[in-house]
Image 1 (cartoon, one colour):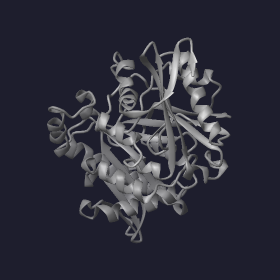
Image 2 (cartoon, rainbow, N blue to C red):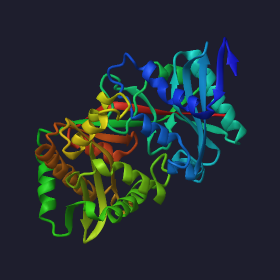
Image 3 (cartoon, rainbow, N blue to C red):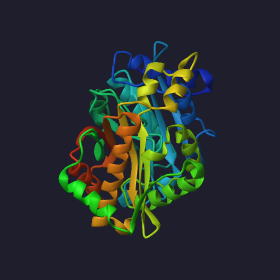
Image 4 (tube, rainbow, N blue to C red):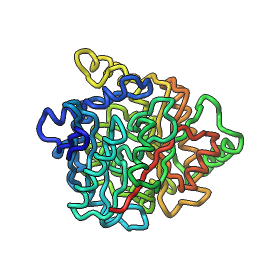
Length: 385
C-alpha cells in the first residue's frame, strides 16, 4: 500500500522486526516521560513460540516507510479465546484488534489502521477493538490523560497526538481504564482504619503473605481467584495455564512475599492483592538494553528494590462476595498491610492502583475511600468493519 510515497509492508525477517521494535526510540526521543522498554522483552512479546498468547492468537505486523525511513508501525491480531466470550462483555465473535501502534503523522496513522483493518476483514472479522498490545492482560488502551509523568511497570505511554489520529480514522470510545495515584506515607482515613481493626478481630479472616517457596501452588490460587473475580468484567479473556507459567517466570524477580497478600475466609482463599515494585524506575536509564553493564545495575536493584513507587496491577475478590461488606473489608486489610510493608521494607512513598475499569463500581469506591486520585486514563476504541 502506497500513499504520497508512503509504503506499508508486512514485517518480514529480522531487519524488519528490528525496525519495528526500534521505532519508538526515534519518535519519543524528546519525551522525558517515555520509558524505553527492554528490547529483548518486546521481541519476546511479538514472537510466536516465545509468547504463549500465540497459543490462542494470531497476528500480523506492518511497517510504514517514507523515503526509506520507518515512520509508523501497527499490529493486527485476533485472540481466539476473546472470540468465544459473550458479546455483552466487550469481546465476542468477529472482534479483532490492532495494537503496537506508533505513527509519525496522521496520514501514516490512517494508512496503517486501514491496512490492519484490511487484514482483519480478510480473516472474517466484523469489528475492531483497539489499541490492545497484544493481549487485554498486557497493555490495553490508548493513554489519553496523564502524559505528564512516566508510566509504571507494565503500563503504556503514548503520544498525545494519537487520540485525534485514531478518532479521525472513525473509531469511537467504548471503555476507559483508569489508574489511581496514592500517597502511601499517610495513614488511611479513620473509617478505613476502624474497618481494618474490625477485620483483625474477626476469627474467620486471615490475611497472609504468599509463600515464594510454593510459587506454582500460590500462582494457581491467584489464577483461580482472578478468573472467578474478573469473569464478568468487560473485556475479560481467560488466562491460560501456559500464560500463568510464563508470566510467573517473568515476574518472579519482582515478586516479594510481603507485597502480595491472600485473604482467607473460613480457611478458603477468597481474595488477593498483587503489588510490584515499579521496575520502570530501574530500567528507564538502561535505554532498552542490559548490555554492557545494565544487567549488573538491574540485578543490584532486584536484590533490594528501593523505589519510590509500588504498582497494584491485580486485585480480586471471588464473585460470591462481591458487593458485600466483607469484600471491601478484605480489600482494605490487604491494602493496609501492603502499604505498611512497602514503606518499612522498600522505602516507597507512592502507590499506583490500576488499571480499573470505569464501570467497576466496587474498585472505584475503594480507591475513593482511601483518598487516591485518578492519574492516568486509557481509552479503548471500537469500529465496525
